[in-house]
Length: 220
Length: 105
Image (cartoon, rainbow over the protein chains, first blue to last red):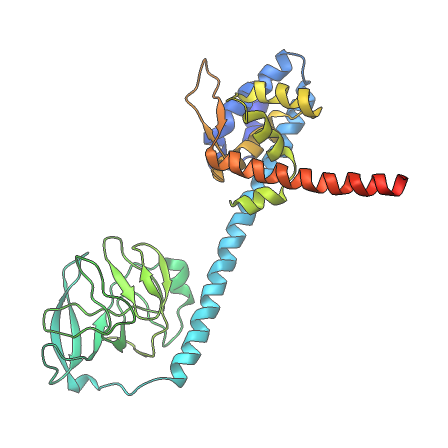
């Protein structure tokens, strides 16, 4: 088959498919034509049909992804409604004291717990959550919804840093120097960090997560 | 790509898996074999679309190229999947044949 025509037909396929199978499909088409198993026209039409099929498949896959993101957004809104009705009183910034919090993936960050919190005491904490969030998610943020660099008020349930994180549903004591983490309701955890979201279970680095936080603060 | 989506697709996947069940084959050998046992003549585009889908589902895998041709072989998961599908088809065929026989008698 004419090289130019073959290239044009293979251009119908998604790039990833073309890179992986394009040369093989082109060679097989040539073999079938040479062996008299098919005609150049039939071979071209078959490649064209395959290209349309693969494009459709790629489109369907991206549509499924979009639907999954929409479902996550709906879940986040539902969580927000739930959180609003179950919100607990927050300490004011004046009543907060700082502890140092070392994240596994970066420089030490600052977490705030209510003033007077003693080492080993159960507490709530305000933590600046530094996450890499895709633009798509960021655009969907609404007032009151947390995002990169924003802070959320959550019970001190989790620990970030080297080692196995605590179970999400087991409160752990807050000590100065210990990491207490909170997560935005819909975020992508930065690679290298180990997090457990209080309401979403264990989340792998780089994976989007939905967390239903009971209360939010705009920033520290 | 899941096995459920393979399940819902045409019989091309089953034909390819059946052809690969005995030994690995490259594209041309696959087309000739399928034509011989099923009377179905696949084109290159159709074949590689189906192969791509099966490979994504982990049911077949590519072997290193030999003489510019890349053979494919069925995986253990593919064999399991094929066995389940063929068993199911055989069961339905048996029921259908029995009912036809009963209607004729």
